[in-house]
Length: 574
Image 1 (cartoon, rainbow, N blue to C red):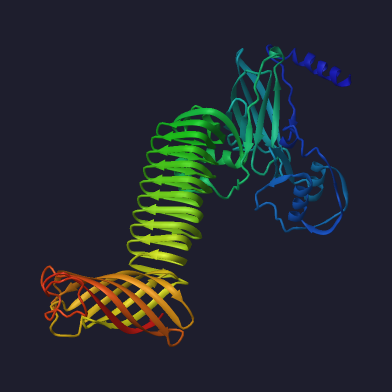
Image 2: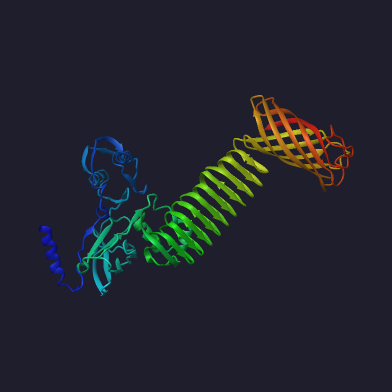
């Protein structure tokens, strides 16, 4: 009864003010009281902890209450020691008890957001009406302790998708279309406790209004993400960066948005805090994220997550996760995880990938246990990757599948590398010296994984009757059996021939050989390798004598022939 009389008294007083067509009620309260708290208001019972940490308390609350906590690791140390008495009351009271008055809490979805807010603000404002459907809220934001103006504070209405910043005097103006009898104008500033201004219009007492959905990006951290990247510094304004710091991981949902540039959007200044189902950016645009489709003539910038399809003529940049397909003429860069496909004419870059990266120049990831990287240039992964195929080079910590490069493969562990050179930490690295049936002395370098490796060799004819004095050999091999004293290899190789004055001949020598290897010590072994050979002699005979152990079909020394042979030598493990 008392509350009804109080409201009636306020209404009577306000009806005589200069605002003839509206009345307002100013209520200042923290966001943690403004979101219809269910978890923060829930009753809990906690035991005493003689000695514990913040992280352990949060773990107990998660197990008992199902509460998830999100916070910036720079402002709250999880290993801080606490000595706590038993507690019975609501969750908000317990958090306030263990962390203190300098922290504030707000509930967004399943998360309790913990913020360091040692400062408090005050709001002084007035309202002007230009017509019956539009009002202008003007005011000043000040530090309640110092009475100094607060610049660059975010003023926004989450339902109308409107936002602005205070100037150096703490002054702001916010134009609002009066579609509802109640407007919640929210004020946020880094290091300050969030505040809301409730404006009530009794003349519009009965208006159907659909409450706008909002969400929270739990992976948000102020020192990382889109705004600290090269693209953020170049294409986004300082005001947007300030807005991002003030509002943190809060975002709103909208069906669509259209923009010419990041500064010219259908959502205005609050565009970077909105997740859209469809986003069209003529040149480029900046949004909180996409759940559907986004098309950009030059670029698309998403602060948080992208789910669906994202296409840009130039580049796509996503500060959170990607689940779907990214297509860009130049590059795709994702600061979080990718589940799907990245396709770029230039470079793809992501934190972790479970899917496929296809890049014209290169692909870069930290971890990709379920990823396949394909490029004409280079692939790089700091962690695990499934497959890598590159026109030039591959680098990874561990490759579970195939690693194929035209020039070089590098990894700590890769069992199936295929390239001219393979530098695998736990793989094959050996040097051999041998002589074959045609009296060629060969020095061969083998490099690769524990199973598959490559062979590179230089051959010199010991006899004077060879037209082909020198040879360069390349091939691939595999370890079939491996024991303490015995190893069996199989290799396929091809040797191109040169004359004594290094003129290249059309002649070539292809071989398939089995190499039984007897180990004399840990690093030294002997081998005798029977081989199956095919020689093509288009320019001139490979040898004047045309010697061979046996022929499969008839033919003289001037023609191609198929024959058996062998080699013997020593091998040194490097």
